[in-house]
Every structure is written in structure tokens, then in C-alpha cells.
Image (cartoon, rainbow, N blue to C red; front, side):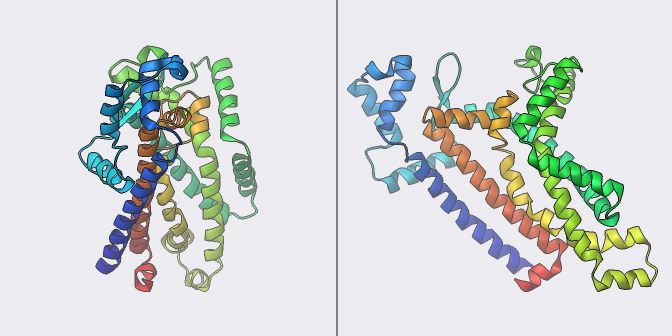
Length: 337
């Protein structure tokens, strides 16, 4: 077990280095002079086509970005700055595009992103696993057909369309403010009981929208895997020996059938940062999705690159966690490795 974990951790470290190099390479992809673009966005506003930065401004920003150095040296400087907590300078959207620390831009949205996605994942797993077990055990029953229909519908309907429908229902029939995660009066207020209650009141729409397709997919995975296990000889033998039905199902087949769901941790963690960009824009959610979209639109290379790096690192960490959990749940994996 120790050798297995050591190999996985070493592989995760090497993959993280590769991801950081890839994220830095993506930062360098936009054509043109990054220094000029920065000065145009920060100093020239809408007059970017007629603005000419002076030599002193350009020299100062060139030194900060290190554009006069080879790419390898720039990468090492970038990694060094990351280690010190300097994520670079990005652009914040608003009435005017203003420069601000990437740490500040991301930090303002990160909490809401983690809260929303974490709540969605919790609801998804809490609902999907029991329903998947029921559908497998009661195959071809009315309940199985109902959940199958709902599952395929959830996979087929686009998330943003479902979001628009739920927003209309909430506004027209439930007399609830829609858009965002809190009401307008709480946006700039400190956290208290009233703001938490208002957040809970607003969470159900984005949670349903973001969780519908994932829940439907997990139900199908759990159902199909459990059906395969229920037909195996060890289950038939246990039934013949008189083991209680639900004890038999939960203790043996479910433990094996849940393995593929544990593997999904690898892409659940990155969703804590990236989320769904389109859904966040449609529902006006204060998450990192719209920040990434804006960064790509204005070629804010540092903000976009940091979000890409965070997503890649969380994918690596999530995969490492799922590998370790699978080895704990299923001893055959660590023996084979």
C-alpha cells in the first residue's frame, strides 16, 4: 500500500509540473505585445487604438512581465512568483476595465464557487446513489421506468435552458428574485444569519441546473454496474445461504459497483473552480466561470492562466485522491499495481 501511494504521489507531482508548464505556455499564446495590451487596457480605456505608451511605462512593465528574457527564464520567474503568492496582475470587468491583483479577482469569487459546486455535488451523490441502487434492484418496475425517463431527460436538456425555465417559474409563480446567489440588498453586506438564509433560498435553482446532468449520469452508471454484479455467482450463493436481501446488496455488490463513481472525484474537484461558464452567465452567478470568460475576451493572460492552472492541479489532486480511495475500497487494485 505504501509503495502504491508513493508511486501515485510522485506521478501526481510530475504531472503538476507538466500542467504548470502547459498553463504558462497557454499564457504566451496570444499574439502581439503583451506589454502594449496591458498599457492599453489600463491607461487608454476605449481609446486603445490611438494610445501610445511612453518608454518609461513600457520599460517598467517589460521588467515586471520579463518579456526581454527567454521563455524558460520567464517560466521560472512565474513559478517563483507563484510560490511567493504573486499571481500576477489581471483586469476586472465593470463600467471600466481596471487592473487588479489576480489573487483579489479570483478570491472574490472562489468562496461562492466552492459553496455552490460543493452543495451541488453533495445533492447529486446523495440522490444518485440510492436511486441507482433502487433502479437496479427493482429493474423494470414503474419506479425504474420513471427514473430512467427523468435521467435521459436530464441528460438531453441543455443546462442553460433548464436554468431559464426554472428562473421563470421562480419569478412568475414563487415570487422569488432570480439571478445571483443572494438578493441585491445582501451583495456587499457582511455574512450574517439573514445573508446565509438568503443564500440557501437562492441555491436551489443553480443546484438543480448544475446537478441534473451529473445526477442522471451517475444514476445510469450505478444502475448498470450494480445489475452486472447482481448476476454474479457470489450474489447467487449468498442468496442461497439466506443472507438478508438488503444486507447482501449493500455489503457486497454495492461496494464493487460504486468503484466507477469514486473515479469521478478526478473531475469533480476541478468543477469546484471552473463550474459551468454558460450556466453562470445565464443565471448571473458570482463564480469563476464568468471571470474566465471575461479574461479570455480581453486577453487577460494571467487571470486565465491561473484559472487553467488551478483546474489542472485540482484534476491531478482529484485523480490522486480517487486512486487512493479505490485502493482502500477495492484491495484488488493495490495488489495489481
